[in-house]
Length: 411
Image (cartoon, rainbow, N blue to C red):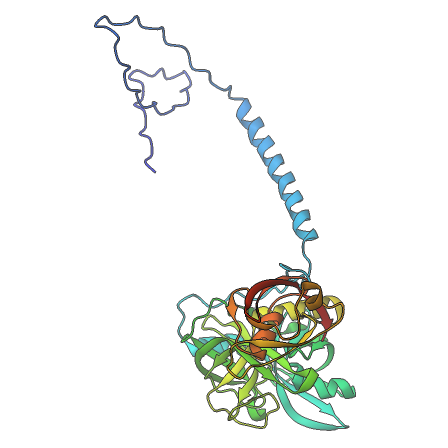
């Protein structure tokens, strides 16, 4: 924007008289068309009304008061809207107080390791009355003593009420208890009072990452604490399932070729700014995804996106348990991998209320293609209970869009 030029000072200012405030001259208006050759009479110039000097301080004070009142009202509205993961658009109520990330453009894996290693811990769980050695990894979530890891790392110990310890980078052992866990999302929240002195890790976003970007995995593979490996993001939004039966975890995963081995589970996957973008959860092993540590790294590992981890953690910290969305129907695949077939519809379920029928073939959710069971389940579980999703359904020769309001279940 062009700044107006300064007006010229008066030619003979009076030393003792105050200098009036100077204002830029307005641009001259174009002369009106003349109705005749005779010049019109000139109108005497009207004096310009100016605000008295005493009014400016009053206006400034009034503006300050209005701003403070508006800020207070805005703060109350924001506080009243700080709901958790059960509500679309929910935000974390936990005050994380994390350190700032590394500068943008940082390309040093050594700098990332130096920043994140103090926030990464080794986890040892015991069950059946005996120590099982290093079972996984975790990372410090906040200054309140909360540590995040995978559910499958501590699941057996939690069922057996066995002791759980975390070990920091300096080899200090802290006792931990389970606040809550989700088998569906493979996330567990631990509490270790002595861990309040540890530095929480900075949080990033998997949604902002691109395939081919460098990532760093940190954890305790094979019991080797404080191990750092690096690679790239091989794929995003990869439907992955781990486990068997009702306890299966369906992950809309980040795929990476950074070396992930048994014991890495629960550790952070971070970008080059030292921000956590995912939680390492599973590795591929010749045609299957495994989280039980039976196989070694073959260059295909999977991490839970941090966005889902935050939602689940928020639910656990607020209520002690996590909920996941569902439509209340069982589904099966097709021989052509061209959708998911509705096999059964539960009574009074969201699927029944929406009008889904046995034999319907679902081919998309909110416009995103669905080729099989895993893709449909992962797509549903990427949303929140209470949200409404659009299913593209083929019924005989007809194609229709059916809206389903998602239900919820603890898990």
